[in-house]
Image (cartoon, helix red, strand yellow):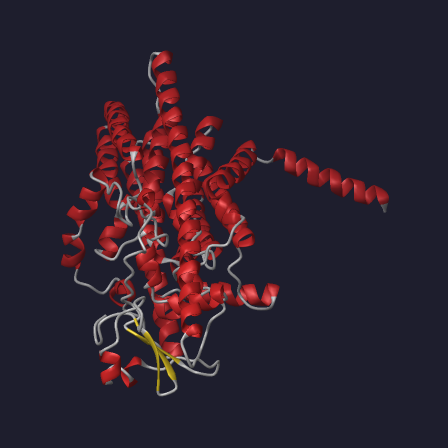
Length: 527
């Protein structure tokens, strides 16, 4: 028995030793980069905006077209039992592991051999502002990162094997990814296009038929994944007798005229060459990172041109395909702007991170007759990516610092509000509360800290937006233990004594009227 146990351990150890070394490089570097960038969010609890509302949930599912998210939620309860919980360390660590496996599949798919490039691209993909924003929605973070892994895994499977079974499995995985979060469509599109570019620059077959089949196969897989998603979604909605919400135009996704999507192409291209800097929820390249982004675009343009010319010299048709593929990249990276048009925010922009994957691919396949030039390109590109990784880690920490102050200031604000409500003359514990114009709170003494005013990663907004957020009563209950019975403001807004009341926090803005505590935040009838 002991010998069998030793034999089994030996077999397992041999299998572990035979694994691709890049797995361990990516895994360890992801954990290190992830802790460096997101350690504050992993070891503290920030629950603002949606997280206050979904502290024990997973977010909107069927009505947002996220049927796979609902399925994952059910599997989670079956496996663990109990309720859902927005767990910082547990959910965050699962998310980071999913990112690590996703990165390895990308590296394996594009055959990135350099350990330096592996570490550099890992740093960017794990610290990109999308992940920083996602960790503000910790209740759903692991599910979204499972969606990323499914998106990458689907492309990986259809790229590795060109047979019917792999095609069907890959399409199903991509469909499930979209069924968790639709914003990963640009990621799978970009990765499929990068795979095709990799094939054009590295494979030796010059047959026109082979090249066309490869392109049609990859694009067909992605399109099939999207179509399967819509088919399953339509079936589930009909089965449950529900319809999609109009949030972020989810109910019109894929239904608008083709002219509408075509009209959004200039915006997608413009945002590629002129990205938002700071002061916007679509800013993925803040502060000095924006300047380095411009340098990267120039660097990519030079490398792309060199490789295109090199391919043209070998085969004209292959060169034409490569040129067209490279020109399409800005559209795939920014395809979310074509999908949605407006209402785009932080979590929807992970496709933009694929630009750095393209840079890594270019550096990896770049060869110049003079070895010193090749080494210079590798050294410059790797150094640039590592610097950006550190910059993104710093930016992530800045946002978590902002979240810390925002949350504490909100707790302080609502603690004072609760104290004043309970201190009003005649207050009794069983009295309901009526909030008048609660989304229009104003307080001249409540000012944003100057160092946080210039950058935004949703959900880390600003104190004035936070206290007026739609979940402010949930936040007050979660952090200040105050959740009284509330009555509709319509029952009180027309009363003369309410009309004459000043606005909170002025004296007299809280009164007991008809055995109800009335708190007036703003002009009656205005939101």
